[in-house]
Length: 230
Ligand code: OGA
Ligand code: MN
Image 1 (tube, rainbow, N blue to C red):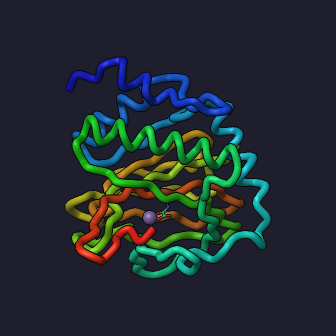
Image 2 (image 1 turned 120 degrees about the vertical axis):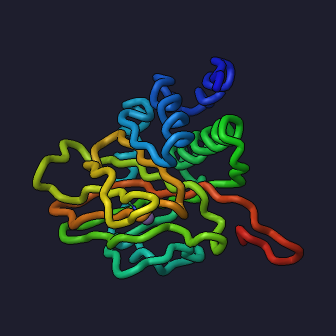
C-alpha cells in the first residue's frame, strides 16, 4: 500500500490549532485497520490540540450533559446491559469543536482513499464517566442494521494510573469471550475499530473519565428513507 506524502499532508488541515504533528500514528492506524480491524494509537493528535479538547471536555457542566442513550439524536447503539455515562453531542458551534469535526472529516477522506470503505459522515459526542460508571460489553452496530461502520474513541485523561479502572477492553472478532486488548483511557490515545465486528466494554471507572466517542457512518439512504437522518 503506497502511502504517499501528499495525502498525509492533507491531514494537516487548516485549524486554529495544528491537529497533527506526526504522520506515524496515522500510517500505523491504516495498517492495523487493514490487517486486524482495530487499532489503538497514542499521541494521535498534537499535544496542543488534545489539550484544547480536554479543556473543553472538562469545562462542560454536568447539567449540560445527558444520560447516554436518550437525547435529541437517535441513538443507534445496541446495549446488551447497561451504561452510566453522560454525553454531549458535538456541533460546530465553537472553534475547538469545529476544528475537531474538520480534523475527523479529513481523517474520513484519508480512510476512504486508502481503505475504500465509503465513509459518508461522522458524528461524535463528549462522554463523561463519573466514579463508578461503566459501559457493559456491547457492539456499536449490528450487521445490516446500522449506518455506523467505524467507531472512534479519543481519551482525554491526565495521569491515568493502575487502579483508576475505566479501561477499554476489546474482544476477539470471532470469539467475543477472548480479550484481545485492554487500554487505559490516557490522554491523547485514540481507539478505532469496526463497529459491527468488535465487542468491547468500559470497566468501572474509579475517577472521572473524559473521552470523545464518535462514529464514521455510511449512507444507507434509499428512496425517501433518509439514513443518516441528518
Ligand atoms: C461507546 C464506547 C468506549 C470507551 O461509547 O460506545 O464503547 O472506551 N466507548 O469510552
Ligand atoms: Mn461502544
